Amino acid sequence: MRALPTTDPRSLMRQADIHCAFCNGAYNQLGSTNKLQVHFSWLFLPWHRWYLYFHERILAHLIGDPKFSLVYWNWDNQANVGGNIMPAMFNQQGSALYDAKRNQNHLPPVLNTLALSDLGNTNLTNEQIIQDNLNVMYQSVVTASTPDLFMGKKYSAGDPEPNIGGTLENAPHTAIHAWTGSDKETYLEDMGNFYSAARDPIFYAHHSNVDRLWAVWNTIGGRRRDHTDPDFLNAQFLFYDECGDMVRVRVEDALDNSKLGVSYLKVNGDKLWLNFEP
Ligand code: C2O
Image 1 (cartoon, helix red, strand yellow):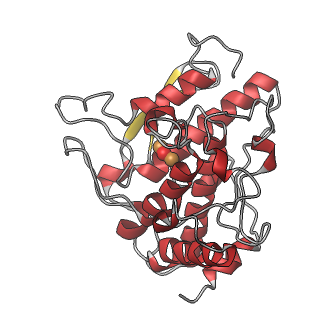
Image 2: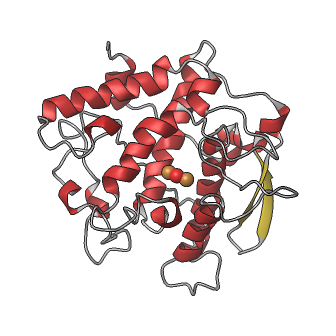
Image 3: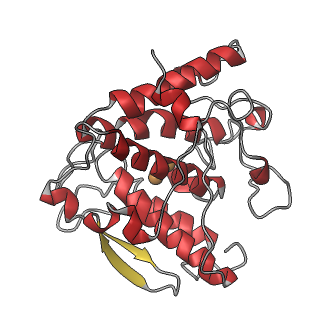
């Protein structure tokens, strides 16, 4: 992906530009002067699921291994090393997974921070960070007991840019972006800004965990069910497939992971926050 010329939509740079195109006010909505934005609303989870789906297919195609799958960074798991750190595989200079534009104060063994209010606070003990992280996970996935709360609210064609994102997006997801991006760059590049975030290969491992947590939320029960509004189900996006051809997909077809060939193991780390009593 890194080696492909940027004229190829499957190159890493163009993959990152696809993310940029669906936010940052890059395009107007069809027939409207309002901008297209896939963050801060109910489009967030399905758009990123489709994005990962094609990214994974492209990688599998490029290396000739149909069984290739993206990894996820289990940043919610607070038992990893007594807290959670950036996975070592992303932190090896010279590796295709390495990105120099990351916060150098947040490299291993520094614990990640899921609480936006803890970002930049250097006086916290590891124990406090872990407790705050567990609390953020509990609030964002368990307490968020409706699709409006967890997935984000309604955003339909013609609406102005939304600001009604769900808990998973607003809290731990955004915190990991801001925590990973470089504080030496003007706009927290790469991970800390929409236009550059997906230039960092860790973006895809980060979002794979977001996607996994959506699937976990679906299993908790109660009113934790996906939106059923036709404006949600029928929303459509354009992506490039593994041959570089543009394809149109619908939100409804992203809701059943088994149809996309995606499944996640049940893992013990989830229990720590699922059972956390705030
Ligand atoms: Cu499109 Cu993590 O943002």
